[in-house]
Length: 339
Image (cartoon, helix red, strand yellow):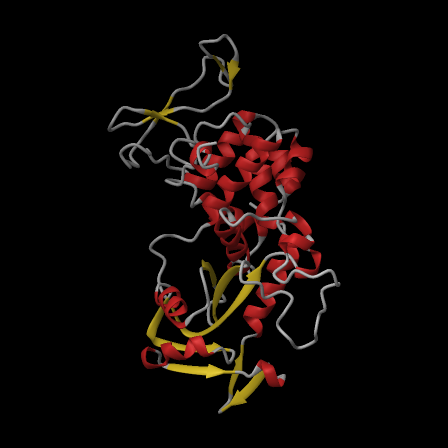
């Protein structure tokens, strides 16, 4: 089935249909019990009228409930997932998940709020739960082969800051000197390291406290099989500490306007990472406008996921997200620091 907004809207006119589509995306034809993991025959607790049932409060519910044949516990397709305990209609969830999978520049919580008639808090919480499902699998293998690495800085421009928040206090306008790292390189900006594997096109981004050799070495070693990797970077000296552990280290000299170099039939460049940063920064600035330091890793996971799956269709990308929703329940209080 080819998924897009039109087919989803047509296939899920009500909540019962939305549950069925979500079950198909998650389980296929065989329900899996989230309590004991059994995929044996589960019993569907069919409503008396075939479509909805009365709740204890007297309202009607179209929620599809199953009973496990082994542990005898009840469950639904939402149990133990990012949807667990939600009061938002499943139909709305399906449309928002597809929109976040299909929108190259991302979707802001305010936009979801306006489009689907949600409160600002519900829309914000909803989008973060979807980003949680977009995180790569904890047991994902290490990158290897040819890997490009680069770092960037996320934060406001110095010339746009209030005078009492600038690094250098002056009554004069901030002078931007071409070629000189003054604006855009503040120490209080958030540092992000990204790695892209040439073969698969997968990208992995992490927030780092600084760009010293020890910090970059630790961050890269957690994501890369060092002995099986040729690392391509710019001339930042911090990367040099990794050379004894790598299969190879190739560089391009940006200070001399060298961005692509050919050596023995190989293309040496960091343009892949630069292109990723270009998309990331335009989207953070144009769609979200502001991203807090505490939640930036989850936004990076979202953009990493879309970039790494850029060669598949939007519907396939949505199916992949639905395959990762289990075991990633995210509650509101920890997400907001107990506020």
